[in-house]
Image: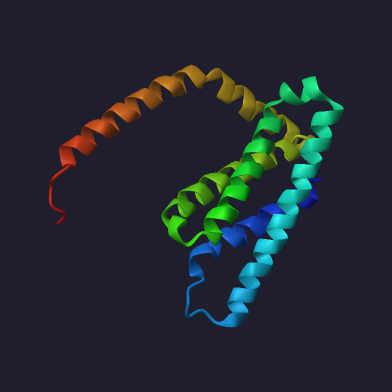
Amino acid sequence: MLFFFTVYTMFFVSYVDNVPSVKKDTPITEILGYYALLVIQFAMVGYFILIEIQQFFRDKLEYISSFWNYTDLLINSMCLMVFILDLMEDKQKLLRPVASGTLIIVWVKLFYYLRAYDSTSQLIRMIIETVKDIRYFLFVLLIGIIGFAGGFYILQYGLSSL
């Protein structure tokens, strides 16, 4: 499964990297390659959605209690959102932030598959425990960052760019 998800991640990276490049004057070979990536990605997302449906019906309570299943649902829904936004002409400004967030979550999902190997499982476990231990600090830090960002935004609002 790690191999298939890694291939999926690489295809998604190349797809997202080419999202803004297709324009009206783009050569037909690039357009065909771009839509081939779209079809491959759509098929891979469909495959992962089928796996999630099977897992849900097989182990309902265990499925709901796992953090990684929520990341799967988030990845699949955000990938579908990226595809839909990409095909809609008037939603292109929303596409890049959604694609960026999706890409980050897809890379984080690779941690799940790296837990299966002895050489990386202890490192992944250490990262997870560290994040659990500092979550309250991160919450307080986030509040401070949001406060300062709001203050600096108000401070610079109305200033002309140099």
